[in-house]
Length: 126
Image (cartoon, rainbow, N blue to C red; front, side, top):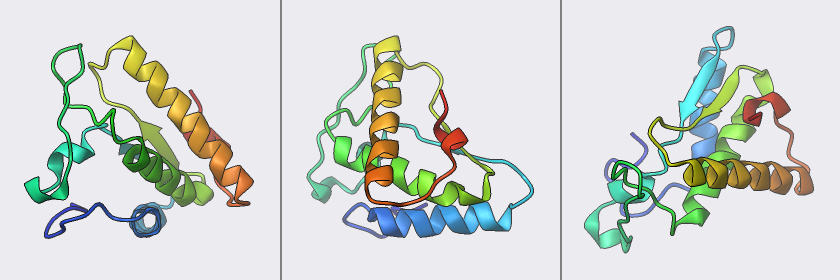
């Protein structure tokens, strides 16, 4: 949805606004944002991305695009101030991919904390 008609990935601020809008509209309903780790494979071919596959089940995984993944995680966390947002990773990931995703989620939380940006700490609980 965020990539339609775009040649570049949306910024963290753009994504945070989108996620916050969903969280606000669904205030009393928990909102889980599935982070598929495959966003880079959905960009137009001119966007200079490298498509890779995980060793488990051939799921596309943008392991070489940590910048995109961290932007998405920080954006989701920023939308969590109403305490109704959760981060969800896809089924079928290899255990090392889950461990890496959790480590990056922790990194995103630490970066927001350093920047003084509030978020619901339960949103990224493992």
